[in-house]
Length: 225
Length: 225
DNA sequence: TAACCCGGTGAACACTGTTCAAATACTTGC
DNA sequence: GCAAGTATTTGAACAGTGTTCACCGGGTTA
Image (cartoon, rainbow over all chains, first blue to last red; front, side):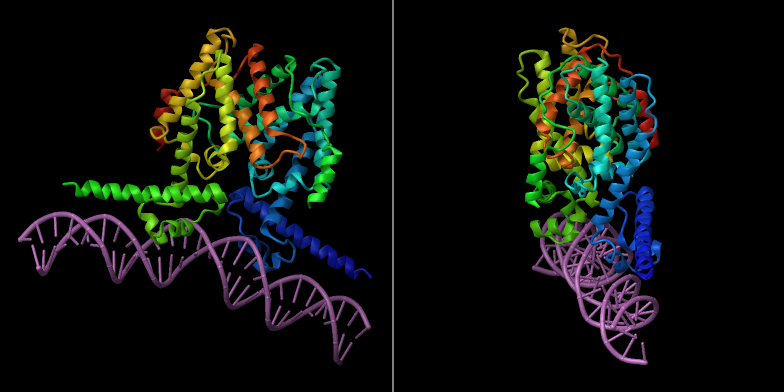
């Protein structure tokens, strides 16, 4: 009765081989230069065989994006031994920026590329990422509790505000739009400091958002699909 | 003696037709779906003819990016009738974000796409954009002069800090990574306010940068090419 | 052993950017 | 007006892309 299981294992092994080959190719050549035929050659299968495992090329990239989120969430799990809540918050977002430097291809796939927009829709599949987000929101909350951040702030909006600043730096760096004299790392530090300072200053935020997607939105989403 | 000139005009007309066709295609279908053959069909020329006007497809996109910068700089020139220097500064960056909403394809080409990174290198060609940047830097300086921003701030770094925040929001919006409950416009407002509040709070910025690229960098750049 | 099923394959389709020899259109010199 | 020369335009081809599909072969099941 182990036949079915062995078949399943084999299938999973090939699936992994495809993803590994795709990852190797796209970290070394950029995801614009990854082709089904190159992947096929690397795993010594015919190009058509890949379509028995993934319905399209985009789905391979989608799986890689998921892998990227796993990578980010794992790396961000360590190094939270900051002294103060504010230090831990700073470290968490610094790690977000560092990730964009260490894994530029993954980062582009996860946050920039327009061909993989399903991410914000696939609820179940990215539950772990939302879990991570919730964790950072707790750090933000502890900053509020300790008085490092004003009590008027919404943790979810703080999260987004800090995210987009560093996302901007990362995009600027990855798309090579900085002037020769400018340094992305220093800019990241400045953005981190300026944003935190701004948040501490007691500005009133307009955005309405919560760490988890509201239930009514989830229902509307389910109805749309 | 007008023949040479007429020839040149004809050439320029075809060049324009190519760019117009490319622009139409790429604002309606996204620049990933623009092909030389589609452009050729639109202008009723053979695909090969286009290579008499542009050395490669990337150069067409590069020309479009330049056009986008012209569009941004022009649109940003109006509406500077803010009451206070700070209002004018806010309006300038709000327009940057608005541009990303009004012309998403241009914006992606100008600030996100990795296949057009020459922009930061082509010095002469984008002199007008640096001129615009200098203008915004002057607004920032007037904010400093009026006491709306601390005198310790470097205008160029202020410029970058505000840019990357809104760039982050724009990228988030364009790549469709916001959660269903989140609103990009509100987020842009928050980022604008938080960043300005942070800058006003008297943080010390680490980045060293100037509005114009330092001369020694220009020399190094010229040597590299 | 025969039937079945399912994974892998080669070939093909419709695309893509780009190149190049050949043909055409036009300008110039006689 | 005709020939020579020069741009410009073209069709065809090359090498590549994602994707589909009829077909084949081997392991599984009856």
